[in-house]
Every structure is written in C-alpha cells, then in structure tokens.
Length: 354
Image (cartoon, rainbow, N blue to C red; front, side):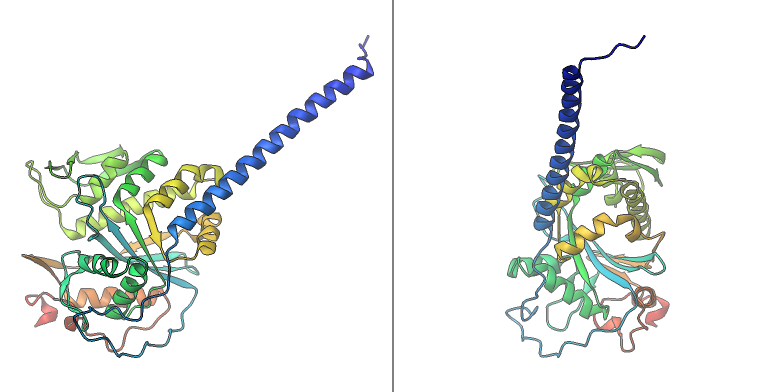
C-alpha cells in the first residue's frame, strides 16, 4: 500500500527542490558571469595599443623617409613575433629579450613554422645603431612603452621583409606559473643540465630522460645554455628543439580543456604575464575556439650559427631559407630583394658567404 503525502507536504517538497535547483542555476550563472568578467579583465590587461609611433628611428639619427609598403595579399594565415623577457626577482628586471621567435600559422593547413632568432645575433638596421637582437624591444620600450610592441613589430617586419600581424611579450615567470597551472609537462630531457647563479637565484639541476617537470624545471629546461657544474654546454639548435617540445606539450594540454572553468587560473596567469597588440575581441574568440586554432604540426626551422664573442653569426643561406619558409607558410612568395647580409652579421666562414 502506497503512502500518500499530504498536498501541503508535496508542495513544500516541490518548493524546496525548486529552490535548490534555482540556487544551482543562479550559482552556475554567477560563476559563468564571474569567469566572463575575469576573462574580460585579463584580456584588457593583455591587449596593448597597436598604433605605432610616427617613427622607430633613434632620436640621434635621421628619421626614415621610406614610404610604407602596401600590405601583401595572403591566404588565411597569421604571423607573430614572440619575445620572452626575464623579470623574475633577482634577474635585474631587464627588458632585453632572451627569446625571439618568428611564427607563421596557416589556418587552412593547420600547420605552423617557427624560427628562433639568436638573441646575440647582431642586427644592422639602416636607421638605428647596430646591436644584438635582444636589444631592440627594450630600446623601443625605453622611448615609449605604449608603442613599444607596435614599433618592435614594425622593426623586425621591415628588417626581414616579413609582414607580421601581431607581437606578444611573455614574462618568463609566466611560463613557470602556466606549466604549474596545467599540472606540469612530460618532457624528454635531452642531456644532464647543471648551472647555478647566486646573483639571480638560477639553480638548474636536471637529469637526462623522460620525466614529469614542474613549472620551474620546464623554465630551466628551455633556458639552459652553459654549465658551471660539470655538464656539457647547449647549442642554439638544441635550445630550439627544447622550445618546440615545450610549446607542443603546452598547446596539447590547453587544447584538452573542455570549458571556460578550466581556463580560470590560466586566464589570470596570462593576464599578469603577457602583453600583446592582438585586439581583445580576437583574443576572446581564439580562447573560445582554441582547439580549432591549434596547429596539428609545428615545424621549428634550425639555423646554423657560430659563436665569436660577443656575437652569434648565422649562416646567410639558412636564414634566407627560413624567412622564405615563413612567407610560404603565410601564403606569400619569397622576398625578391632580401639581402640579409646588409642587415644581419652573417658567418663569413660559411659556404654562403664565400
């Protein structure tokens, strides 16, 4: 025999269930609204002004009178200039770029190509004094921090005759935080690494082999260049391979996110450590469609280099082919009048310089 609840009790039960359900809906809606607000706030911090100043020339040197070249027609592709700066406590807060990458992403083929420019490569622009490649962002920032990204992007675009759509500047400590936020990365460490610097707190101590690395260890992995602890030095080509491995693993982790909730911590970290001239609306759209934006394959193009203090000299043929590959990836023909030896200190001992 079934027991019948009084109608008043049924109404109270239904009311209680409805209140709980409504509370859950309100809580979910409030959290979604909070995430959207948080995302909008973070994107507002990331996005930088994207209008360059009238000239990127040094105040002590003549202004450039070169007419801007018309925008070249391209397929559905994007090009980026990525720069990494070290602003960790104890690092001196320098804005010199320790990592400089040119990236070409083809959205049709879902492929990307990356060229990592040696930070110690000497550049010889026509309107500025020659310096190492890592100097110029700090220089433009010192002139006007509001237009530093736009002017640095225009500088490298003109120098290498590569139309660059956007630039992003990443604080190295943001990489550490980001890796920790996604739960670490499984990395194949290619060699034993030991280096200690008490001045900035660097303490690299990694063993060769496949292993799970936290954020600090991943940062050590990509930064390792030389040893003072009995392990071997690292070439630029080896460092480029490490950067590719970390980038691929990190993109795979982010692409596995199944909703905005998983982006919660990541949004804060990116907001605090990345500055770019990508418009806020476009950034929001890319986050929502991250899996569609992520390339299926990433090719890092190596450069043959030679160290002769205080500069790294690059093989001219290698660099020319690398720039042409980026242009091809972006749907552009090879640059017709690109003479890299005029703007970059190339290796005089290489076959291409003879």
